Every structure is written in structure tokens, then in C-alpha cells.
Length: 341
Image 1: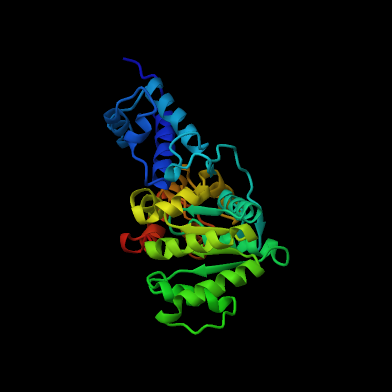
Image 2: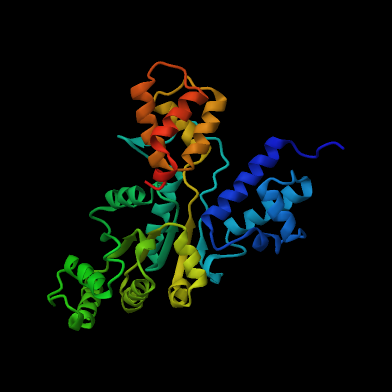
């Protein structure tokens, strides 16, 4: 029996759907299958590679992926009026805009779109992506571009600031110069004064590492926005994909999920972007198989890519890059214990 589609076409389609599910941990293969004539078991088997899939299976999975990415179906949090941004880029890329050591990738543009939307509409936006895709750097780049035009600040959560309600409100209040001293008995007073300061000086609040914050902290963010959005205060939350799953499963976060006006699940660096960046960095003598392995090992992480490029240029300058070279770089930078670094 003749195969309907080549392994290359099936593999590319499978990888695209896998990236979508990685960016949307609230979805499973069965959720996608509900919007196709396919059985859930068929979708699972195809995604795992147990079956190659013909035109019907591949076509249906790509069709439903398009619908999810455009926000037509399965919108995060179930809010159908929310804007949904996708960073899927199928166009050919020959060069990525660069300023110094900073590259303006699709991730950077998506984060900028979310920040600008939340300023314009005083909305809450959520940007999710795995560690290292460049969310924080993208937010910093947007702030540099809008400095002097738009008031914004970044509050980066830690395991401590993301656990204490009063500690969080007090820390945010100090940035705005609130006069009340911190302490459990002053939590409400600090919150009220913080709302007054924000109403007087509307500011885009960017919360980084949002996955570190407990549900009660996210409730305060939601309440803060409720009290100040009519004055023009917007909120952007940058987080790992796990937060998206929590928003859909934890009742305590339902109020926040219902207020999110724009979502941007990021899959990170595209293969075309990586090829352009590697070339612009002067790494041009590389095997096709080595590049494919490098792309797989990078996993969409800008941080991993730039670390790898630095090591390749330091240790293998002027030499042809082979699969063995990439495997050696991976052993130094991407051990299982350090993949989240």
C-alpha cells in the first residue's frame, strides 16, 4: 500500500501540533479530536508516532490547530471574546533584526503586542512560554522602546514574594512610595493606598515569573486591576505554561481567568529564526543533520541557543559543525539536571 504523505510532511505536522500542546498544557489530544471526525485514540496514536497518518488525519489535525491558534475554538479560560495570539511562523526567514546582541524574534514581537494591547485597553494579558524563550528580555525591550511615553514597571516574583499577600502588596507599594509600613495589620491599608497611587498615575504592571505566585497573590492582582482599570491600568503576566493549566483547573483562579483579555502562548524560537541567527553569528559551516539535532536540543530556547553559539565559537571556530560537535555542546550545557536553567 502506497503511503499518502511522506514522513517529512507527517513529521512537520506532528511537530507543529506537539508545540501547540506544549504551549497549551490545558489541552490534550482528545480535546483537539473533539473538533474533528477522528477518535481521541487516533489523535493520541498519531501524536505519539505510533501511526504515520494519512491525508485525513494530518489534514484534520492541522485544521483544528489553525482554529485553536486563531482563537476560534478552545480559547484558554473559556473566554471567547479574548484575543489569542499565536507565534507560529511558517514564512521563510533569512535574517532576524538585531540590535547589539539582542535579536527581535517573533517572541519579542508577540510580547510587545500584548503589552501594547494591555496599555491601550487597560486589560489583563497572559504570556506563557517555557524557561529561556525570552519573555523577560522581550518585556525589557518593549519598555526600552516606550520609555518616556508609557509608564510601566516589572515586578519579578520569587518563592518568597509569591507566597505572602502582605509581602507582595508591601513590595509593590514601596515601588509607588506608599506611606503605610508593612505588617499583617496594614495589608488592607497598603492595598487601598496602592490603588489610589495607581489611579493617580496609571501604569502597566508587568509581573514576571507568574508561575511562582500562589493563587491568593493572583487574586490580589485581579482585585488591583478591578479597582484601577477604569483609570487606565493594565496588567501583563509572564509565566511558564503551567500557569495556564492552573487557570483552567483551579477554582480560586477562575475570576482572574475570566478577566484575561489577551493570551499569547509562545512556542519559542522557530527553526527559521534559529537558522538565520546562527548564520548571522558567523556559524555557517554546519551539516544539515547537525543543525536538525541542534534545533531539537535547543527546544525553542533563545537562552540555550546563545549559550551554545558562544561555546561553538570559542571551541570550534573555523571547524565544520557536525552531529558530534552538537552532542558535545549539549553534554556541557543541556544535561537533564540543567535543562530548566
